[in-house]
Length: 253
Image (spheres, rainbow, N blue to C red):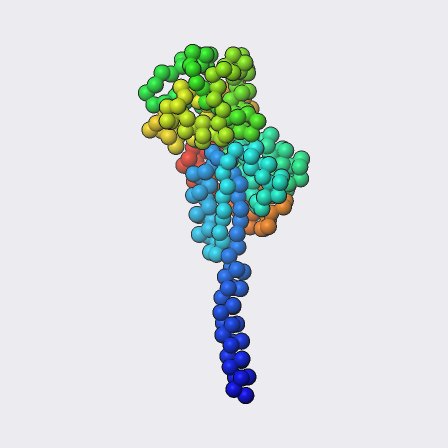
């Protein structure tokens, strides 16, 4: 009899200990967002706002070059939302069947600018880059900003001529860092990124001659939380989110 009483108490205690663990797991919903490196600051703020609106939800953000993020998704990384900095990368994601094509939306646009270290020599025209020893751009194979830069320089007849002077970055923030730290003489980055280092770089000009810099966002087909992924995407399209994005220099399409 005594043994049965002790056993009953043990079972009850175990239930009381285990119950909070089960509840906490049920409440701790998670969403994984993979976004272009240029969205880092803006998405960190959107993440905080969205989590505040959804108590118990945790959003994990991955930031890198759009091409690298696409490869991770294609390889099965547990991602719920993908935001790219170009149409080409999202087109590849749709073709590969890793995102829900019906959820795809263009949600912001940006511009490409030429920058130099603060107070340093400025080229009067794009053609004057030929007199600069080191020019940083994103690697075109994986970095959308690098593709935009290549397209603009090709149209200006400069891409082939500048090959020996180009320094390639793994993402647009790395290119920005090279210029801000004075490791190169000039660089091509997004206007929104240049704003993040306004004290360290000078914007020389807005660069034309490339496709519009439109950012698409979509729900990933293989994600673990597609419902909340869609909810985050919808939130990114709201006026509230638009105000945050505008604060970092992004514009609506």
